[in-house]
Image (spheres, rainbow, N blue to C red):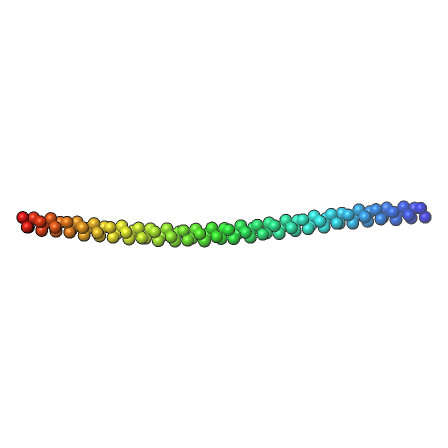
Length: 100
C-alpha cells in the first residue's frame, strides 16, 4: 500500500511539474504573440511612412519639372525681349542720326 501511495505521490508531482511547464509555455507564447503584434504594427507604420515619403518625392519631382519648364520659358522670353530691345535701340539710334 505504501508503494502505491508513493507512486501516486510521484505521479502527482510529475503532473504538477508538467502543469507548471505548460503554464510557463503558455505565458511565453502570449508574450511572443504580443511581440509579433507590436512588430506588425511598427511594420505597418513604417510602410505608411515610406509611402508618404514616396508621395512627397513624386510631388517634389513634379514641382521641379514645372520649375524647370517655367525657367526655360522665362529664358526664351528674355531672349525675345533682348532681341526686341536691341532692334528698338538700333531704330532709335538710326532715327536720331536721321534727325541730325
